[in-house]
Image 1 (cartoon, rainbow, N blue to C red):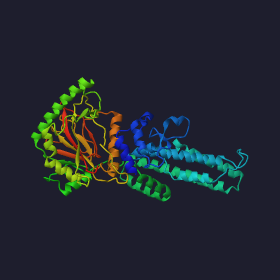
Image 2 (image 1 turned 180 degrees about the vertical axis):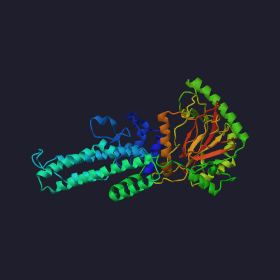
Image 3 (image 1 turned 120 degrees about the vertical axis):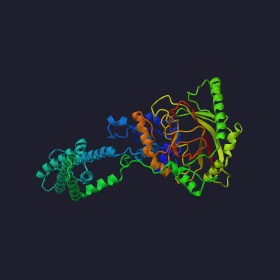
Image 4 (image 1 turned 120 degrees about the horizontal axis):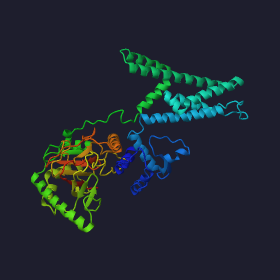
Length: 523
């Protein structure tokens, strides 16, 4: 269920910022449609829940911090917090804040317990040492703390206060067994904390000074620490095993473009089809006759000129304006998606491409036949990637997105039901300096929800960080991303659920890309 909910969220909101949320962005028609669709999937989906706007801020339930939270439906809370977990926002820095938050809560409870008296409520009363105090102390003992943790949370002061309060009371009331035991436990905890802080100081000094004996001394100290505080050491190890930090293990992938190529003609081999279902993308080099693609290019340019005239005379629009018609759409990344006139009836060469054996065998092999019929063509069009006016690499680069989500809630690995075929009408360059003309980047394996859950978070978070910092880059493909060069005659096919984005066109010429969208007969 987590994988399904997360993929639904990122499919609809690919670049939604999780770091600091602006409340108005949570109330949009798209959000309302997505949340309504979670009825029956997320229990109590419309119950109102408090959501922290800033991922790095704790909520202390005070009047001053009320502006740091918003009231949202439970399904919205689940989607956002689940994405924060999976994309590594709750990393070491956040867990340090959380540790201090828990230390403060436990320290406050311990202070409140020893401050309450069983008599008339004055200082001469006996503190009511009950189960609450012992539980608070147990929670304080469970954390591996630093000196700064104790200072920031006030937990050190709280335990010292408890020691003084209990010692004062035990001097006057010698029969207070619970008070005596709690006092001794508090003093032991203070001693343990002191040892841990001293060990940390010595270890840091050894690492700074270096020397051939430094590592041996550190190993001896670690051995001593394990034997002195086994319960704390186990807690530390458990916390490390649950580390969600994307920086702890760098994202890597071993998928290369050569592994994605289909070279068996006239039909893909079973091994090549298996590779597509695993990666969600394949490339057929030199599959279509260049003269057919030249005819389609001429037809596409003629259609574009006609479209510009129609937009200008009938709608008072230019290509720089944003518009969304059935036949033509303005796309992010300074792109235009044109289906007007891109049909087999209007362009005979396009008809030959649609019925070419390379295309038919590819589509039939991936989608297969069903009792509902053979795969069918849904759309044909040309995406024009116009030159970018900015030198900033992130300007006119699309956000990461999927063209469609998975179909079934309880089956996160169903086979392809829809696919896109990209056919370049001019050569497409991804990395060649001075020739980068809007190649498409893909994250292999993200067409399945479990793969999307594993591979997408570091990619999405890196993209958000680049946008937030507004840094200029000199190009290059992020780690784990496939961005192939394509020549006229090549064919690239991918599952519509695959995470991808179009890069900016750094040249001075338009880059047209023919696309065909197919679906299974039963869809």
